[in-house]
Image (cartoon, rainbow, N blue to C red; front, side, top):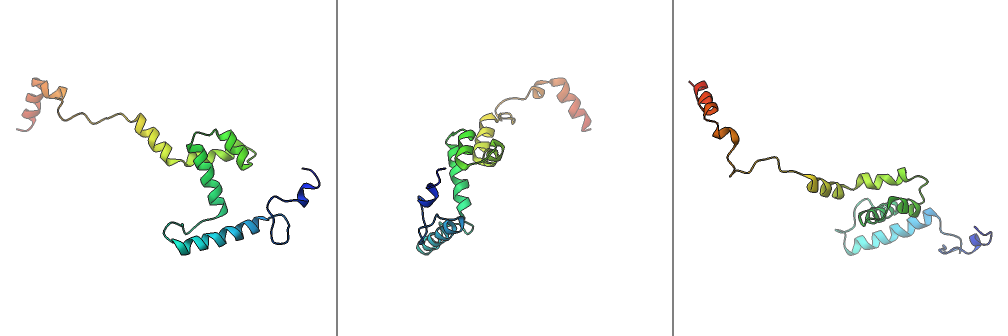
Length: 129
């Protein structure tokens, strides 16, 4: 980073200093409260800047973006840290299970092989006596 870059922040506070995490959180909470006044039903109780970060990462992952690119966007050192998004995506897990699911319950209309075995049926009936 160039030495003069910190003197010209892209986003600044009311003192023209770079925006801090606390400043971003303050602005975020202000707008969350305004949105709750308009429609309280669509704003979750627990909402933070990190919620937005996590949501964006999940949307990127669900859209098929490689975890390596998501890692770079989030600034994670290791892709293992970013892997939490892959493990957390229950929708994709459900869809994968649905694709892999094989019907184990036989169709009702099919005659079972043991029902055709006359000897077996006679033997089963004899146990009832």
